[in-house]
Picture 1: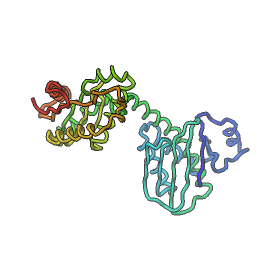
Picture 2 (picture 1 turned 180 degrees about the horizontal axis):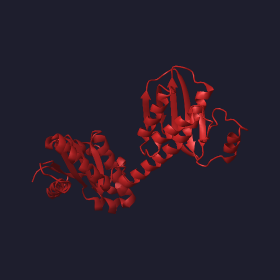
Picture 3 (picture 1 turned 60 degrees about the vertical axis):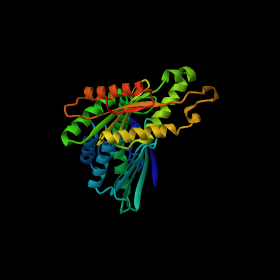
Picture 4 (picture 1 turned 180 degrees about the vertical axis):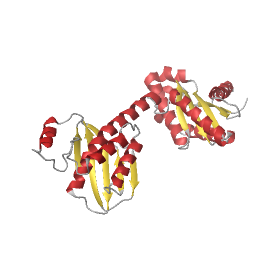
Length: 320
């Protein structure tokens, strides 16, 4: 059983009036607005759901709260949520035989797919309760998705998809606090693309952008899921390596440069007319020292990057 529910943020005044006057009932699958007294689960439970969800701007937390509400009422033993763009796949609880599947939209904005499952078959009244509750979920979900999109716009580099300078400063503070608290190692790389002006002059700005995106993709493939990648600005990048000492950071830097060396000219967008151009990088590394601040850690890595470039570029420097 699968239903597509086109919710609207505008109230259906005719349906509300009819329901309140008792002249119309809502069949399963059409309970699209919050109509007093029409929800078989009781208005108190709907109010409880609204209280749980309103103000939650994190998609995963919101879906988890909705699942707990369903589970408390015996409406679901398990839940799966998938976004329309495939970026999120949340699975909660246990998979059961009987399921109710819904594709949610709100004002023609696709919000994703929700599947609830349990041991027993769903009755029509239970399905109506779920569908009406999904009206509240859809409204809160859209707010959470839009908040997430706005947050990404503020903290993500539009060209490479890496974090930007704003998010770099936020994450450094968090990781420094964690490092001080747990006395765990922390390292930071400052990376610069060698002779990038020449690359831009030869390929044009669009070609230069392609080179930056290709290099960023190498960083993603060469690092762990716990490492944090940022575009510092222009052709400079920063990689924050939690739980990594100086030797571990050196090994990671060598791996990055080795993977970059394997990239062919075609992948960089270099044609026959670009002989002598081969994108390379220089890396400066600093590890956390007692008393370090964000500024001192960044400055030490930047100083070592300067020395790496002074050594002829295409080098890694972890001490001065």
